[in-house]
Image: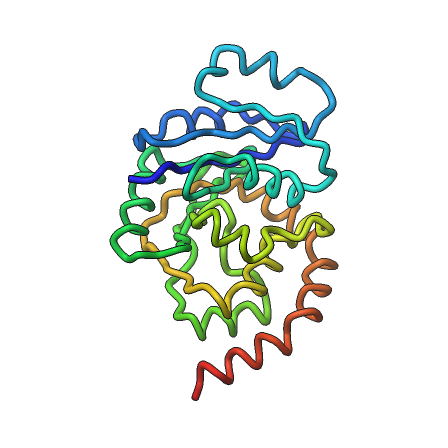
Length: 232
């Protein structure tokens, strides 16, 4: 099966120890882990000493996570990519299961449900549900129903569609899905394989509100036209 690149952006705000370990322990053998270090120090690099043979470390100059992920897409050797953010983690079989699903269905993109881990370390969920292509477009007119950490996508397909918008700080994934949905089928693998820090999610939602409104204004009419085409 094809190589998968796990892209892990790091801005220095949160520890990535558990996150990195969940990537290292993936049962899928044909993988690479790329840490996109947005800090200006060598603190993270020094901490990776024991894992440097298994991890590619890149200092990136980009000022947004979206820009760092674009750098990761351009240096990745994998045919497919996944995304893993600090404080979140994967089930050990996440990449294996999702890669098998992608190949079985000849999919270029898939996403999954997920669990949330609250401040007391209690696991809640799973959250998320299967949406048809039209239903997903309707949902995107209101919010972002897809957690980026659950996504696996064919790298060249994402690059061909422009990657992520580096001018956005928080809603870059939402903008990407709204932009590419007329061109790519979104497959849903109904297996919760990702654990999301829900405290961080709530904080992030507060910061995303303004950018969400901006993205909605950009894409609402385009999504409406796409929905109407799907209805014919």
